[in-house]
Length: 145
Image (cartoon, rainbow, N blue to C red; front, side, top):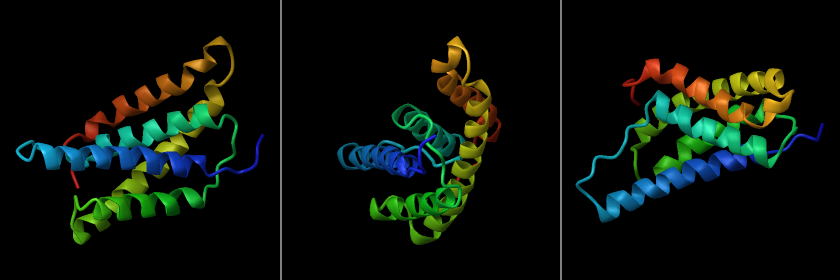
């Protein structure tokens, strides 16, 4: 296995930044549109997108389990405030919920990948695992932050 890499945290920042950039562009060019809420399925979709991209960009890389919640807290707490999409009070709630969702998704996704990464279907295992996790989280739809 490779040394510990921080590509997962970098990919999370890139994916979440792209989502926030799209929301800022929609707010600027279509001010009457209703922007999506950062609920648990949305945070899970962002997290799983970052995890799948990380799996293909850095296959076999070890994870820094201490760094994952720290960088996730910084990402989910600072980026929405910089984009001026949430207030400071809401950023704290988003930081706590985003960190919990991303850390849990990382743990479950990594565990599934360790078990499913053998055989001829190993190429599609990350996408299918992410889809299964996202469908399981749909029970929490409507719980917004």
